[in-house]
Length: 383
Ligand SMILES: Cc1cc2nc3c(=O)[nH]c(=O)nc-3n(C[C@H](O)[C@H](O)[C@H](O)COP(=O)(O)OP(=O)(O)OC[C@H]3O[C@@H](n4cnc5c(N)ncnc54)[C@H](O)[C@@H]3O)c2cc1C
Image (tube, rainbow, N blue to C red; front, side, top):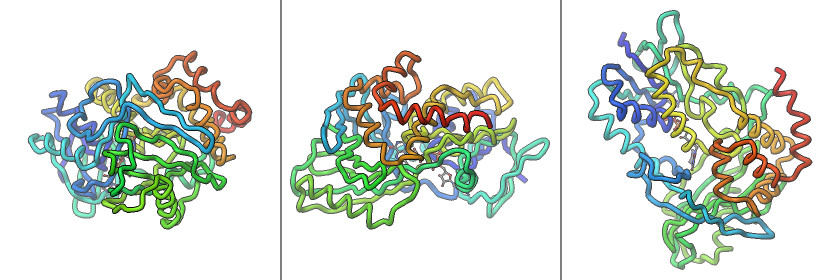
């Protein structure tokens, strides 16, 4: 049975960011590393966006940047100047290629295109079975998300950020390529939190995503009818769909870290790195993987990696509100973005604000739902 220093079960965003930074550090060349994924990572299966104030190491994979974004609902729209941030778009395949190009030059790293069927922690090592082989390792970094474990518990609310997106090319010049649309809540809310997200790459090309923060997924037709309606509203008569994507990202404060052990660390969405209140994972994974690579060089007990912060609790309050009253999302996000300072909101979502700055953002939101959520919050805290 082949033995490795590190095995990554799942080789998506979080694993690839970690491995990339391990290689760049130059400090893991004597470690044997196995990456396992059932998918060969050769498809453009998702589009990531994240905000950043300076050039990142993913610059090579960024295909579009915006310095301005639109936020709107049925009553108002506001053009947000994002400076000093830029909103960056990364095509999944460009990211996979950037990382695999570097991996292919490393003799200590092996990629196995296999499905993991079992992970078992034993006294002296971790055992991993795939459909084809068995392996063992000293440390396991797992990003295979265990949906049923999260969804079968009832203590913490679990919503989904779910969407279908169409990349379209129109005959009419209908888009402003200098401005992304973050959240357009002018679409019918139907008792949920529903919005359009638009990423224009030229005057005639954009990705349009009909998105919900809610419990239940919709039928495919419903997302697509809403995208069609929105395209009509933009005055577009002639267009072709060039690509489609879809996603369902868990939004939850479920304490994933409790499953970490000395030898096994859950990373990415499986490790709770998805920002519970927004579904964004790219930026937080970028930050966490930098911390993780430094941690692996000095620490051996993987339990010590997780640090709980006040932001976990803020996210919990928002999720509790959306869990109880899903229709309140539009008014909460609108009150935050109507007059709030966009760069402060980004800093807050990046979990980098001081308590004083937190209050500046939070006090823009309607008070009663948060007071009620605060009262309800003891049921999460004292378990
Ligand atoms: C379409 C889409 C768009 C998104 N857009 C954004 C965005 O704009 N910004 C943002 O911040 N986040 C976005 N997200 C959310 C988040 O960034 C991604 O889901 C991200 O890929 C999560 O990283 P991860 O490493 O946890 O999981 P993944 O990247 O999904 O990696 C997990 C890996 O595990 C593999 N795997 C699963 N089961 C097995 C098994 N049994 N055996 C072997 N391998 C297995 C999968 O093939 C996959 O490669 C988006 C998600 C989707 C789906």
